[in-house]
Image (cartoon, rainbow, N blue to C red; front, top):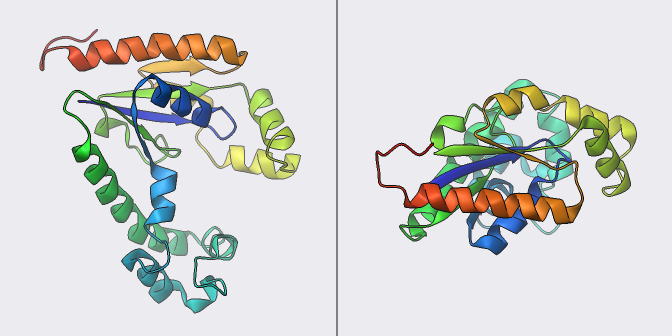
Length: 206
Protein backbone atom coordinates (compact mmCIF):
# COMPACT_ATOMS: atom_id res chain seq x y z
CA UNK A 1 0.00 0.00 0.00
CA UNK A 2 1.20 3.48 -0.87
CA UNK A 3 -0.12 6.26 1.38
CA UNK A 4 -0.28 9.59 -0.44
CA UNK A 5 -1.10 12.98 1.07
CA UNK A 6 -2.85 15.33 -1.40
CA UNK A 7 -3.15 19.01 -0.62
CA UNK A 8 -3.35 22.44 -2.23
CA UNK A 9 -4.58 25.93 -1.60
CA UNK A 10 -8.24 26.87 -1.85
CA UNK A 11 -9.16 27.27 -5.52
CA UNK A 12 -6.05 25.44 -6.75
CA UNK A 13 -8.11 22.56 -8.14
CA UNK A 14 -7.31 19.81 -5.65
CA UNK A 15 -10.81 18.31 -5.95
CA UNK A 16 -10.40 17.95 -9.69
CA UNK A 17 -7.05 16.21 -9.23
CA UNK A 18 -8.51 13.84 -6.62
CA UNK A 19 -11.37 13.01 -9.03
CA UNK A 20 -8.86 12.21 -11.80
CA UNK A 21 -6.77 10.04 -9.46
CA UNK A 22 -9.88 8.08 -8.45
CA UNK A 23 -10.66 7.58 -12.15
CA UNK A 24 -7.15 6.09 -12.52
CA UNK A 25 -7.79 3.67 -9.64
CA UNK A 26 -6.83 5.45 -6.42
CA UNK A 27 -8.68 4.85 -3.15
CA UNK A 28 -9.70 8.33 -1.93
CA UNK A 29 -10.03 9.25 1.74
CA UNK A 30 -11.50 12.76 1.90
CA UNK A 31 -10.80 14.47 5.23
CA UNK A 32 -13.43 17.17 4.67
CA UNK A 33 -16.14 14.61 3.95
CA UNK A 34 -15.19 12.55 7.00
CA UNK A 35 -15.19 15.70 9.15
CA UNK A 36 -18.84 16.20 8.16
CA UNK A 37 -19.73 12.54 8.74
CA UNK A 38 -18.33 12.38 12.29
CA UNK A 39 -20.60 15.22 13.44
CA UNK A 40 -23.73 14.07 11.60
CA UNK A 41 -26.99 13.88 13.62
CA UNK A 42 -26.96 11.01 16.09
CA UNK A 43 -23.18 10.66 16.27
CA UNK A 44 -21.08 10.85 19.44
CA UNK A 45 -19.10 13.57 17.67
CA UNK A 46 -22.09 15.88 17.38
CA UNK A 47 -23.05 15.18 21.00
CA UNK A 48 -19.54 16.20 22.10
CA UNK A 49 -19.67 19.40 20.04
CA UNK A 50 -23.07 20.32 21.52
CA UNK A 51 -21.76 19.64 25.02
CA UNK A 52 -18.84 21.99 24.37
CA UNK A 53 -20.66 24.79 22.55
CA UNK A 54 -24.33 24.54 23.51
CA UNK A 55 -27.49 23.66 21.61
CA UNK A 56 -27.52 27.00 19.83
CA UNK A 57 -25.09 25.52 17.29
CA UNK A 58 -27.85 23.17 16.05
CA UNK A 59 -30.35 23.90 13.30
CA UNK A 60 -34.07 23.24 13.76
CA UNK A 61 -33.71 19.72 12.35
CA UNK A 62 -30.95 18.85 14.83
CA UNK A 63 -28.01 19.01 12.44
CA UNK A 64 -24.91 21.13 12.95
CA UNK A 65 -25.29 24.80 12.02
CA UNK A 66 -21.87 25.15 10.40
CA UNK A 67 -21.99 28.90 9.68
CA UNK A 68 -22.99 29.62 13.29
CA UNK A 69 -20.31 27.34 14.73
CA UNK A 70 -17.78 28.84 12.34
CA UNK A 71 -18.60 32.37 13.48
CA UNK A 72 -17.95 31.26 17.07
CA UNK A 73 -14.71 29.32 16.66
CA UNK A 74 -12.96 31.45 14.05
CA UNK A 75 -13.31 34.48 16.32
CA UNK A 76 -11.68 32.69 19.28
CA UNK A 77 -8.50 30.57 18.93
CA UNK A 78 -9.24 28.72 22.20
CA UNK A 79 -12.68 27.67 20.96
CA UNK A 80 -11.25 26.61 17.61
CA UNK A 81 -8.69 24.49 19.45
CA UNK A 82 -11.48 22.95 21.53
CA UNK A 83 -13.44 22.05 18.39
CA UNK A 84 -10.35 20.59 16.72
CA UNK A 85 -9.65 18.50 19.84
CA UNK A 86 -13.08 16.88 19.38
CA UNK A 87 -13.16 16.48 15.60
CA UNK A 88 -9.56 15.72 14.59
CA UNK A 89 -9.20 12.44 16.57
CA UNK A 90 -12.52 11.22 15.13
CA UNK A 91 -11.42 12.06 11.59
CA UNK A 92 -8.07 10.36 12.18
CA UNK A 93 -9.70 7.20 13.51
CA UNK A 94 -12.16 6.98 10.61
CA UNK A 95 -9.39 7.64 8.08
CA UNK A 96 -7.37 4.76 9.53
CA UNK A 97 -10.40 2.45 9.32
CA UNK A 98 -10.88 3.27 5.64
CA UNK A 99 -7.17 2.88 4.95
CA UNK A 100 -7.07 -0.53 6.64
CA UNK A 101 -10.04 -1.65 4.55
CA UNK A 102 -8.19 -0.92 1.29
CA UNK A 103 -6.39 -3.65 -0.65
CA UNK A 104 -2.75 -4.35 0.23
CA UNK A 105 -1.56 -3.11 -3.17
CA UNK A 106 -3.79 -0.01 -3.20
CA UNK A 107 -2.67 3.55 -3.76
CA UNK A 108 -4.53 5.38 -0.99
CA UNK A 109 -4.87 9.13 -1.48
CA UNK A 110 -5.67 11.20 1.60
CA UNK A 111 -7.23 14.51 0.49
CA UNK A 112 -6.23 16.83 3.36
CA UNK A 113 -6.76 20.59 2.85
CA UNK A 114 -4.66 21.66 5.88
CA UNK A 115 -1.92 19.04 5.53
CA UNK A 116 0.82 21.70 5.40
CA UNK A 117 -0.62 23.86 8.17
CA UNK A 118 -1.01 20.92 10.57
CA UNK A 119 2.42 19.41 9.87
CA UNK A 120 0.99 16.10 8.64
CA UNK A 121 3.46 15.34 5.82
CA UNK A 122 5.36 12.68 7.86
CA UNK A 123 2.18 10.54 7.98
CA UNK A 124 2.42 9.76 4.26
CA UNK A 125 4.83 7.93 1.96
CA UNK A 126 4.79 10.98 -0.28
CA UNK A 127 2.97 14.29 -0.63
CA UNK A 128 1.38 15.70 -3.77
CA UNK A 129 0.72 19.44 -3.88
CA UNK A 130 -1.73 20.90 -6.41
CA UNK A 131 -0.47 24.37 -7.21
CA UNK A 132 -1.94 27.35 -9.02
CA UNK A 133 -1.04 31.03 -9.13
CA UNK A 134 -2.82 33.32 -6.66
CA UNK A 135 -4.45 35.03 -9.65
CA UNK A 136 -5.90 31.71 -10.84
CA UNK A 137 -7.09 30.82 -7.33
CA UNK A 138 -8.77 34.20 -6.90
CA UNK A 139 -10.48 33.97 -10.28
CA UNK A 140 -11.86 30.48 -9.54
CA UNK A 141 -13.14 31.45 -6.10
CA UNK A 142 -14.89 34.58 -7.34
CA UNK A 143 -16.14 33.29 -10.68
CA UNK A 144 -16.96 29.65 -9.87
CA UNK A 145 -17.81 29.74 -6.16
CA UNK A 146 -19.42 33.17 -6.06
CA UNK A 147 -17.20 34.54 -3.28
CA UNK A 148 -16.52 38.23 -2.96
CA UNK A 149 -12.94 39.16 -3.78
CA UNK A 150 -12.43 40.26 -0.16
CA UNK A 151 -13.67 36.94 1.22
CA UNK A 152 -11.59 34.96 -1.29
CA UNK A 153 -8.41 36.87 -0.42
CA UNK A 154 -9.06 36.36 3.31
CA UNK A 155 -9.51 32.59 2.83
CA UNK A 156 -6.30 32.40 0.81
CA UNK A 157 -4.35 34.46 3.36
CA UNK A 158 -5.48 32.15 6.19
CA UNK A 159 -3.79 29.17 4.53
CA UNK A 160 -0.15 28.23 4.04
CA UNK A 161 1.61 29.99 1.19
CA UNK A 162 2.41 28.26 -2.08
CA UNK A 163 6.07 28.28 -1.10
CA UNK A 164 5.31 26.52 2.20
CA UNK A 165 3.29 23.83 0.43
CA UNK A 166 5.90 23.26 -2.26
CA UNK A 167 8.56 22.88 0.45
CA UNK A 168 6.92 19.66 1.69
CA UNK A 169 5.94 18.33 -1.75
CA UNK A 170 7.39 15.21 -3.33
CA UNK A 171 5.34 15.86 -6.46
CA UNK A 172 3.86 19.19 -7.61
CA UNK A 173 0.94 19.28 -10.06
CA UNK A 174 0.67 22.64 -11.81
CA UNK A 175 -3.00 23.48 -12.34
CA UNK A 176 -2.55 26.74 -14.23
CA UNK A 177 -3.30 24.68 -17.35
CA UNK A 178 -6.26 23.53 -19.48
CA UNK A 179 -8.09 20.42 -18.27
CA UNK A 180 -6.65 18.24 -21.04
CA UNK A 181 -3.12 19.05 -19.94
CA UNK A 182 -4.02 18.47 -16.29
CA UNK A 183 -5.42 15.06 -17.19
CA UNK A 184 -2.15 14.11 -18.92
CA UNK A 185 -0.12 15.26 -15.94
CA UNK A 186 -2.28 13.28 -13.49
CA UNK A 187 -1.90 10.14 -15.60
CA UNK A 188 1.89 10.56 -15.51
CA UNK A 189 1.75 11.02 -11.73
CA UNK A 190 -0.47 7.95 -11.41
CA UNK A 191 2.07 5.85 -13.30
CA UNK A 192 4.74 7.01 -10.83
CA UNK A 193 2.51 6.20 -7.84
CA UNK A 194 1.85 2.69 -9.15
CA UNK A 195 5.58 2.18 -9.72
CA UNK A 196 6.32 3.23 -6.14
CA UNK A 197 3.54 1.08 -4.71
CA UNK A 198 4.99 -1.98 -6.42
CA UNK A 199 8.60 -1.35 -5.35
CA UNK A 200 9.86 -3.91 -2.77
CA UNK A 201 9.67 -2.67 0.81
CA UNK A 202 12.87 -0.96 1.88
CA UNK A 203 14.18 -0.51 -1.66
CA UNK A 204 15.09 2.91 -3.04
CA UNK A 205 12.09 4.43 -4.77
CA UNK A 206 13.74 7.36 -6.45
